[in-house]
Length: 63
Picture 1: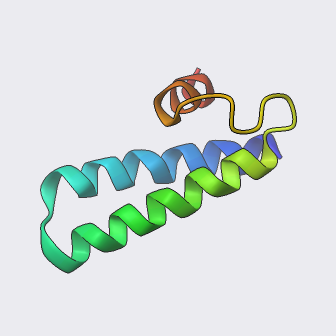
Picture 2: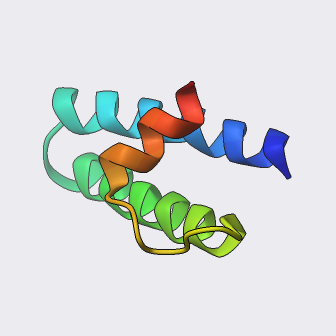
């Protein structure tokens, strides 16, 4: 499970970069993928599901 969370954190980094560098339809695809990643992370997080902001959770996963 830890490996999946780390993979999701890497995906979130790519999505954030894509959101910063794109416009239009591609930007919407990055936003949708980011939302899906966050939903999956919240499903996998057994301790505090949904109690952290996206940024807090991303920082914890990167640590």
